[in-house]
Image 1 (cartoon, rainbow, N blue to C red):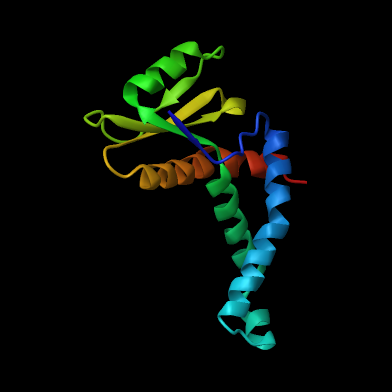
Image 2: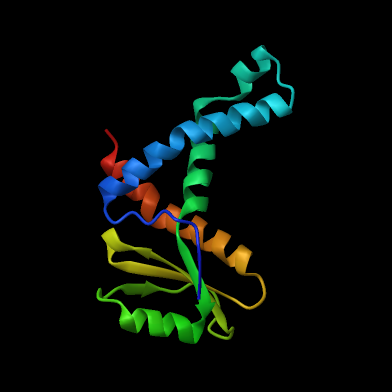
Length: 144
């Protein structure tokens, strides 16, 4: 079993705090990318909107989420050894040997994405799924 990423917020409040923490990094990355693209000050002002920075923040947050990956047997062993009783939301095919998973504690859920040969793609897909289904909603509920 492998672990990738480090964000594993336990509560919706922790989700909001982690999301806030990546905000300055998202702004800096956006600014540096625009600089590398040689945007003028005017072009930067026109093209780098709040929505653009928010998209960068969403992508950065999602890509830092902790994801485990391993064989289906390793996942079943992990699930059996967990203290919590999670609802399992499966994505992908049952006909493959590998699975990536992410725990969403505040929803008592573990979400999986199965794969055969592309673990990085499975992790990316899984992160987009959990961000869209769980974290976006949690962020909207905890917004100031």
